[in-house]
Image (tube, rainbow, N blue to C red):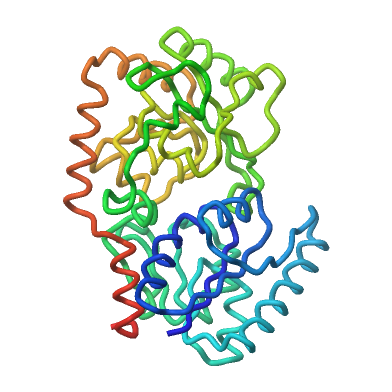
Length: 343
């Protein structure tokens, strides 16, 4: 079988990488096209996944239109040569166009209820729209809900084994068992981020001040960090971040994906965002792995409360195990679903 996968964001690399590995083992042919966004190409190279570069867009609606038009055309030309049997990706104008013109199935994955623009472009052309079972919107006959999270495509114990050598890469004197915290700040540049918010500069200062009294602080950020926080920047290869997140005492950040990654790894997670997604809400309410708020006083109170628990990580590992009992191996499901022609 020939499968064409589109990568539009670094998180998509993680979502599909094990699917690509498993399909390669089974003799399927994979073609990957990828936008040059943030660290997407770096991750593809790190995971030894060949790709065709769709280019990098500039800021502004005009340049986004030009880039998308070129990417659509390039994906179509790749499709004519490769002749895929099926397309896989998130909501993508590139896949929507090629799959429609060539009359090939398009499996569209979505886990963000607020990504309205992408849905408008892609969903009418999708053969199946695949979401976590906790997704809050119903897309009708095309919609297929799967009892898993997209983060489990790469962080399920079947595929992810934490590697303590990450502390050597970190080169900070930190060792396994030490108290440390991972903070995440986002760029707020996505279409679904309009009107939403997380930390302001004063709240960042308050949070860092509180956490530094308990252990080391490390920050990962989509946008340039304020000068005062630059000394906290994580200095490891991006593919190692989940090893660090697994061993962290706590995650606090604006990124929903990383909040969920921490949760499924059994790391206490504070999600600082006004947006609510089905998967983070379920991890918060059903499994009690995430606390969500944008109120800095509530956040600091929760952080201090959690840190008073001497068995915090052990308790979260038990909660994580309860989650894993309920959720399926998403990568295995994806491979089986494609091989059985979407039955």
